[in-house]
View (cartoon, helix red, strand yellow):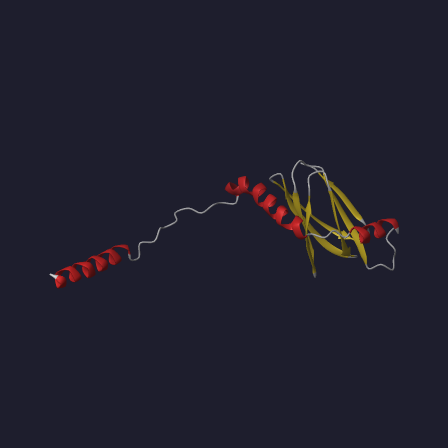
Length: 147
């Protein structure tokens, strides 16, 4: 009887293992970029919340740059962005050798110092709308973004 019981358990185990072997769920469709617009605001809000915890604005350097009217001896200049929309945003500023993400709250101004005389790519999501610009920065640069 023990042998029959042990044989039954082993047989059942082998049958149950073999019946599920190789039966992985198959994904028939993948999310499209256009179908993902509902999540872009949520993703931006999550990224904003994470960045705002550790972000340190360069207030003194930007104010010195603006008040000293772009001193020729200074190799850097400022970029400031006023967010006039009802949504928080994360602005990405990038160039060769430079990359920074700036969290900008609704109705707030975000800013950073960048090396002068370079092409910069500015991008971000604002209330499910994409913002992208390419600028050659030689002096202080300020923009206002609204939805």
